Image 1: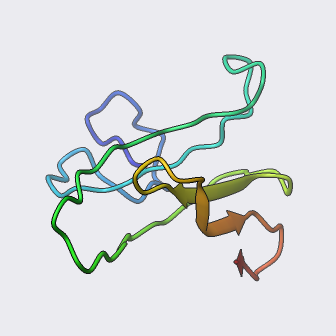
Image 2: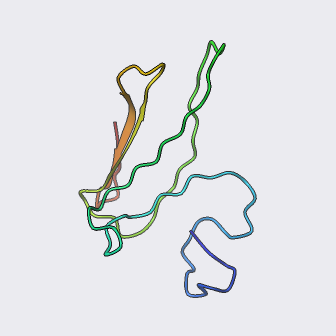
Length: 100
């Protein structure tokens, strides 16, 4: 992401500016000295009581030096049932992408 607040002037390759007021989801590479196990988990709880149709819509973009072993998995659980995979994205070091 691009921080144009003047703190990181050298970042000219980001995709979201600091003046953005719209909701977005950002993902970063977690392999670094500040994260010894290289993992990260984010969880949300959404009340879907009385809903009959549920859609998941997201705009995502990523850039950076992701390792070929990097992946993102989106899972869901309704009413404490076992988790089901919604989709998984894995990094590839080519011009192709894999979305399963």
